[in-house]
Length: 268
Image (cartoon, rainbow, N blue to C red; front, side, top):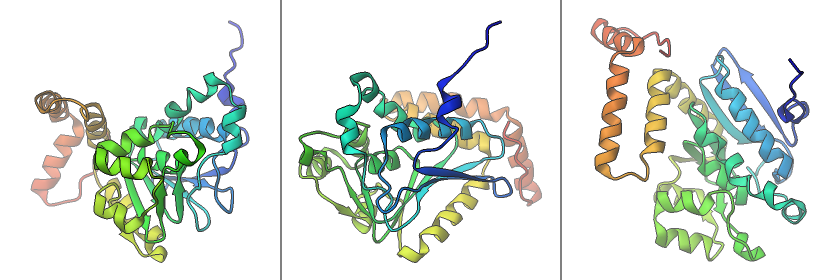
């Protein structure tokens, strides 16, 4: 059999602008943007981020993934010159790469402070939970460049806050402060800047307390049924419920409930 090679082998040898930290004891992985001061996300970095999410999705040590950044800004967006230099085929993959947190079967939390613009906002929107510091500012400023969001930003935002508010954000390149993002509902919590890490830690530990099988199931169900009629969504929910009813985790959950003890999840 011939030796097989995959570009991922070389792509992951040296991460471009970010690090990965795995804390097996806390069943947590952190993807940390590290290109100060604005943590600009390059073209190669987008593909590496996708591959890292895929790798962590298969890592048995990890239950929850956190996407965060060093410094006072999450990310001011992408490498603008890189768009002009990239081939049309490469550009066509942008949305697929940035959607990696949504495809990941495990819960993904984005911890945002400071600038969260362009692709930084788009990859945060692809996460399951967004926690904002009061310093956070969200924006899709592509109109200022004669462009539009290209990695799912306007589509995801519209599904969360509606067409009128999305037009207001995208067509005017408006910046939305963290508190307003919370009021509009696309951020689950807005906290003082010095409480962002503590709030993230608390959510990680809360999510670890649930059955990983049930978490995977409900994440996929919600993603798959987002654009479905209510009748179809209810039908899909029923099928997922039926499958979980025969799982070891459901039996453990019921037994732990009656025994008034903490459940010991197996993820199956």
